[in-house]
Amino acid sequence: MTVILSLLFVLAYVAIALEHPLKVNKSASALLGAGLLWTVYALAAGDTARVNAELGESLMGTAQIVFFLIAAMAIVEVVDAHDGFEVLTAMIKTQRLSTLMWLVGFFTFFLSAILDNLTTTIVMVSLMKRLLAEREDRLSFAGVIVIAANAGGAWTPIGDVTTTMLWIGGQITTMAIIQGVFLASIVNLLVPLAIAAWIMGDRPVVAPPRLAEKDTLATTPWERSVVLVLGLSVLVLVPVFKSTTHLPPFLGILLGLGVLWAVADLMHRRKEDSQKQHLTLVSALARIDMGSIVFFIGILLAVSVLEHSHILGALAHWLDETVGRLDLIVMVIGLASAVVDNVPLVAASMGMYDLAQYPPDSFLWEFMAYCAGTGGSILIIGSAAGVAAMGLERIDFVWYLRKVSALALAGYLAGAMVYLAQYHLTA
Image (cartoon, rainbow, N blue to C red; front, side):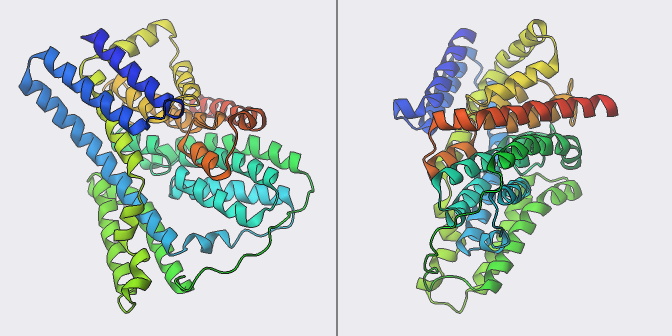
């Protein structure tokens, strides 16, 4: 059974990694893998009651992550529909490319910590199209945005889906991950940002011709500000809700989504349906990337089979005996996330190592959050942020490899060294 399950998972993983050459959506591969793995496991185990209990346990953990992601995505879509991000991006004004790059880098870093790296990348890359006329400049900024978004998402529980998984799974807590990983994450940004800004030199910003303002359905400044402040407040207060009530984070963000929904409906109650339809939560829910949600469901359920069948435990034991050093194991996992999706890597790691042996906020989980969150920047295909930037600006894989990968790798290694030094000095 172990060989068959391992082979099925590897095949599903290869299909996910080769999504574009195969022309098969990775969500389909993840669902196929999950379904086949559970089917084989149930038939081989021969204990229906135990398998169903294990499936229920896995489903409960998966549902918590999925509910959280759906609510977070809906909140971001509502803010975007109200042009709320215009309030933030309007603050970025300068005439030098190097200064603009510093502003964009830090802005992306901190915005990603509040929203998430994927959404922040989409917002910032879209903004660059309005600020920069030269395509080569936009590509350079897109590379820095990917690095900054992934670095910013690694040090908060809501900034990256892998950190969210660790947070909901109980491997990390809010204040501990912020205190433990912030310094490494900021170094991960500063090293490539300083090099990229130095390369830009004193070149001026060449802005594109101004386009006409949005149509008459645009929101008022007051509506944008209210929705932006309320949406960001909901996201920021979710960790406070969890620590105060000790209830799962998904319940806190669903509560916040309900508040935002009610406020938005009351705000637009006097408008005609044609004027407010695109501003409603119902419309926002329709714009959510459900393909990504389904992918998370499939991959998390697939990995859970390997956990219940003790394959992940055996893999962890083999790594401990072969590699020996935990810091090297985690760094290799981070580098691997540049090639393959970091969601299954982190999900597998959560199943490989027991919380009884590695309690919450221990070295393993904090370093895992940093490495898996930032290692994906090394290749354009290694993170959701990179894939989004690739699609928005049609970034060539080889161009990114030549121009950005070395910068991202330097930042990754520098941040890792800072985290290790910080850990040994404070342990």
